[in-house]
Length: 143
Image (cartoon, rainbow, N blue to C red):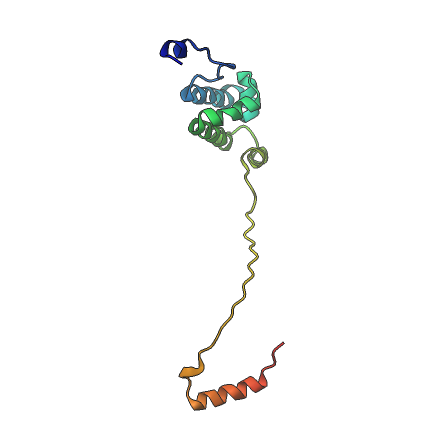
């Protein structure tokens, strides 16, 4: 394909909801600011989507387009939830557990199965030590 044809080629599909990473972050900052100052709401991802007139799927697609901005945007919403003073701690905890995978505790249980085989080296034992070991071995029962 020559250069003229390549420049005249039309883009397919709908345009992205956010022009670039900064536009995405600015939109989230605007929403979080409105939640904390004017509306006194707890900022949520769904609330952001309603505010912008987009679906949650569109919000989650931003991770593919602007990975770093997506992570920063989620962090902004998460931080705003923690800092919000007009909702109960119980509501904050509920939302953070469901939207950001917070947990009350971490399970540290591990199942470890190991077989330890030892092959003692008796060559360095004295004759007297070997006699004592033989007497001890007579008293031990192996299951």
